[in-house]
Image (cartoon, rainbow, N blue to C red; front, side, top):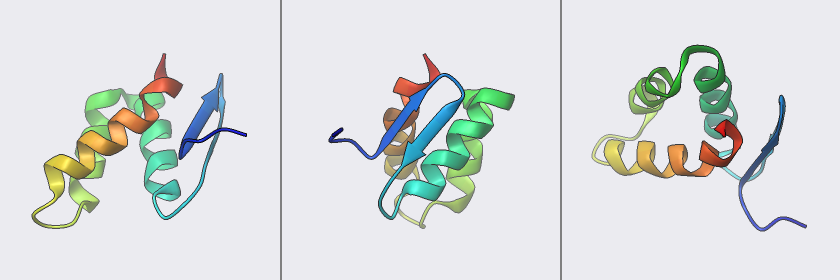
Length: 67
């Protein structure tokens, strides 16, 4: 059992919890269009006043799947 909210191997990814959808969406966008596009998409949907932290936390979570 993995103790993390996001996991990817190759072209298959899984996520859990309330951030599953943003993590998976950001991962797909990052793989197709690059990390900057994923950051911009996350920034757009992030709560006001939390945008920078939200984006940083999400990008850190999906970083493992982008290697």
